[in-house]
Length: 431
View (cartoon, helix red, strand yellow):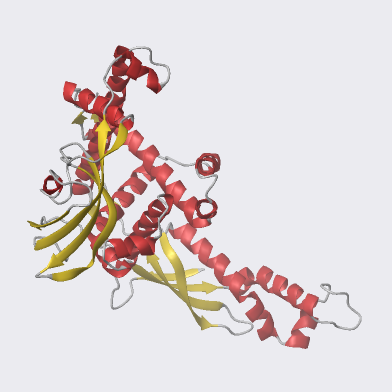
């Protein structure tokens, strides 16, 4: 069936051209099925629908019509056999070009198909990384306790001057050279004086002001400010204090601990916080070790040239992941892009370097999974989808997205990554 496989001339990275020939013997069952389908659509005196002999259909409609009817099935089935036989890893649908379609002769067609680049792995089982010991510092527990204190704090509206630790509700106007900055007006913005803020020195300018007060001052915007149009520039601010709240933080004692469920003493709560912090540190270390391990394997692997199509597919996947995450947070992607003042096209361009790394990681994981015969069962995929459906039971938009075939493939890929990474960690990480 497969007459020839050759690289396209001139070469296109990541593509193959296949010249395929299906002989008359192989075509026979497809032609017979095609004739039967045609016989169900036309009426021929003396024959029941679907029971007309092949030769009769041939005389009635012409054999070329039978070939045309059978063509899609001939190509799809023969193409599948070719891909299976040659163990080709295909990206996306093929481009088909019919070379010969004449009754009584073999069907000949060309396929241009995108394939995954080959990867040569190192001896990854000999890569060894020592897992560091988890060390919890008292400061981490103190910060966790402070966070809980803030969660139970009471806000009391006051009329005095604002001081460090107070919460203020303000209106902000921004100017540059006395000209209002586009989208530089913010109303009813809350800020706690003295806490870290994305513009250093901003909250300190509120100290000593009372409700209704107006103040003007200028600050230099940091280089890494999210709005690149303002980054590293001098901006004039005009603010108005709408209201001031004193924040009363509860005392750390046994009574405070009882606010959090089953805890009877502050010591019990502290022990649980230590355990929580330890688990968080373990997750951070685990993620760091995964990244270090994958980076070592990728750096020691060799890859064929990665096609633009494969990179673009990964960029689209990254964008879809971002879109889903934004949807989970109750926003739309259009609002997010507007907020960060960029376009979908520019954002995707910024994804390119990371997409290349992700493609290499995927190629490595797929190759290792293949070598180690790691597989994902249908039941594992269904269990994961059902878990997500329960998690987002009240959001129909997310539920609909979860149940698509594309998302099912995404889940399968995620589970494969996880299972393969677990294998690598068990093999390569020294406890």
